[in-house]
Image 1 (cartoon, rainbow, N blue to C red):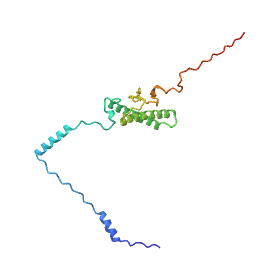
Image 2: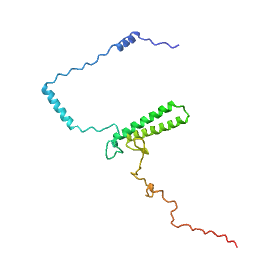
Image 3: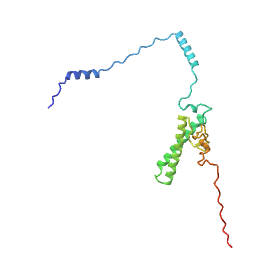
Image 4: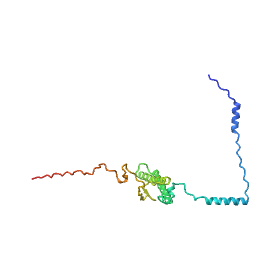
Length: 186
């Protein structure tokens, strides 16, 4: 049988008592009150520092959302679309919970929920990344997105991919057309 080590109980008790002692918090030394001249000088320095500071640029969303030349639509409009999409998705979700699962009304509410939920996610993608990825836009998704090729892709032979694939047959010789024989009956 293995022997137990001698345990010094008094050391354990002492260490526990040390751990239980309240720790003193550092007291912060109070500042001396400023004189009227010092207050005026500090206010002047603060005024100069604020004048040097650049105007605040929004950092909540992608920088494309704030730039009038690059943005898809004004940020205020897009935030209104987002609010509307979230409200529509929420209403459809409530309808789904109210209706019996598997019924025709429930499935239409589910598809409406997914329709608006996806649109809200597309708007959030734009706000986060600066790329509009939805095929529709507008308050009620009433407009279709017109896609524009910004940077075209090319085939290895140098032809643009949006102009169709390169031809498989490269000869320009057309195949001969066969004439059909007429059935002559006499």
